[in-house]
Image (cartoon, rainbow, N blue to C red; front, side):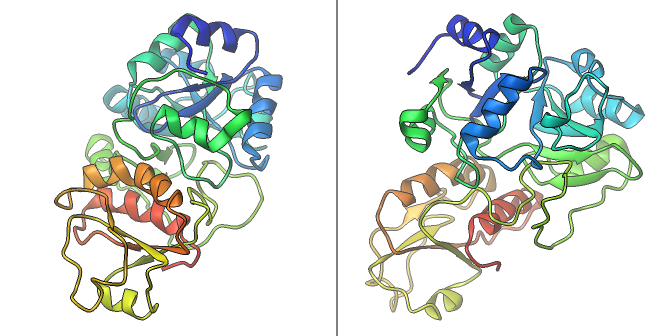
Length: 327
């Protein structure tokens, strides 16, 4: 059911959940400081209790009511908020452990999406809003995706059109020691380093399967995944080694001509972009993965983008976590 801003505010105030648009993906929103609302989020998503939720605030002033800010946090917020940067800081006592995955830090973000900001203003309370999808499924970038993912259990939705970035926010840990990226996203490590004038520690290239408390969402190996098994490849030779067939579906980073020996093996491919532009690829990634899941293929074979800049790290991270085998 699609609802208005005022209806969304009313739902949230009485403790119900609402799917809200952000500039990254649609979020499953509830009152962050109300245990009952937080429990509803975990229950509807089927999310492990050790996986923390991002708390969305209107501005830095509101964030300072929930976390212990330091100089680096002030600097990051001044430049990147509102926007797709989540910062992790030591939590204050008012923040329940249920929202932090049992840890002593809280992840905060000030979204830039106008409708979400209007809801935050009217509710006048912080909102928890993980991606509006069942755990480990592909994140929604359109209102219709939320309905498709949850079916009869779908909460009310505030339709804000297609999300601008299409992948979740960058998560930056500023809670202790050196600044550290916990999740790649639209804001690149290079941009953060330029603002903070500090070297940023990047995530280690390893699978994370521990169910101990974590500081950031999106840190389990299998995440953002379609139901259809998805495999990622760096080149055509790797695809050939899988013995592709007409039962497979091919996702390409741009409109490429298939090699002659493979041209008859696939239905019409799905394209992430027209010319390999990484911003377009990121924006379309989840939409294409959701569409691919509807095709009834045996496997989804995905060719990685050839262009390598820091936004590629976010795209590769999501594809790696969506794939059945690490590449």
